[in-house]
Length: 163
Image (cartoon, rainbow, N blue to C red; front, side, top):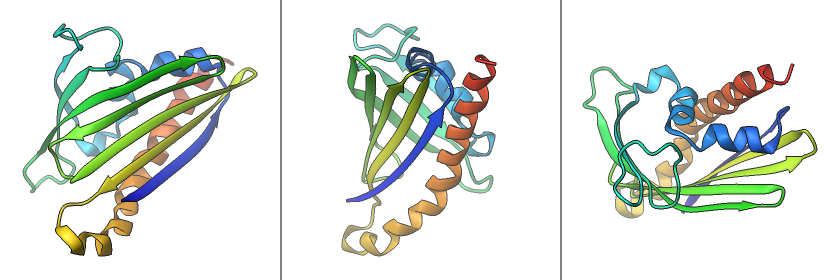
């Protein structure tokens, strides 16, 4: 299994950063336009459509068209774990179907005074059997600009609120 990680310090309180990342609006605000993301549906663990907060058991059906001439990619993201502790928050999602044989994305938030350290970790496997290990490092080419954008956008939105 391959791994990608990005860490950023946000000049905003933990609760604000956590709240922003806990909603579908946050996901849409953090997704680069070039990914062509379309949220098809959001369901809470009890079947509620469009829940206000993405909790454990929530499922998000999406499609993405980052390349105009390729067919869109469809998948379901499922929140598998969500924790709120003193000075720490996290949630984890996995991908059901889609372009990856395995996708586990852990979002961690550490409070540090009036700031928050945001860490995204993606554990993944590409399809393709044994040969995929040769191509997995190349996934960085797609992950790096996407997560750089997500972290920059988080800073842009949340640090503007603290000035």
